[in-house]
Amino acid sequence: MNKNTIETSKGLSGMLRMFKTTMVDKLGLQPTHRIAFVGCAGTCVPFIELFAYTIRETMPGMTLIPDGIVDDARSIWFVKDIGMQIGGNADPRGADYVVLLGGISMPSSKLSMEATNKLIKEVMKPGGKVVGVCFMDMFSKAGWEGKVPFDMVMNANIDSVTLDKVE
Image 1 (cartoon, helix red, strand yellow):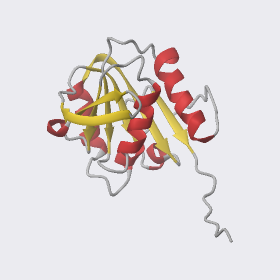
Image 2: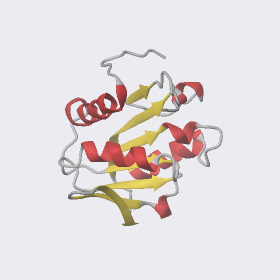
Image 3: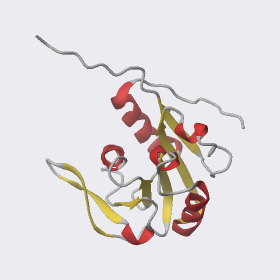
């Protein structure tokens, strides 16, 4: 499989800016489109809220499909002075974009690659786009690239994490 790097950035703010420009400029996101985010319940949710925040003006409503369970799908919306909130039940079907978070490709995930492909077919409109967002090349390491119909994959690497005692 060939990869063609089209943009690079650094840090979380760079990743969030890149997500917005990818969705809006490169993939043509419009206010009439629908987005379904798919990620692990708990760990992926804060990242989904951050990514959704970057496109809040473009996308008045979005959905979260936790662990790929369509019947558990929830609405995502912007609350002024608070940020993105996840709440009531929603129907994710008819999505123009499916955004997959890398946590679902980890061995501990409840969602397999095969189930993910089935989910994409169930919720995405014909001609829709699939965007992967992961850390540390998770989709590649899990063997999903070339087997899941990604249109684009955004990968971020965590260089180091330190804990310092301040005296």
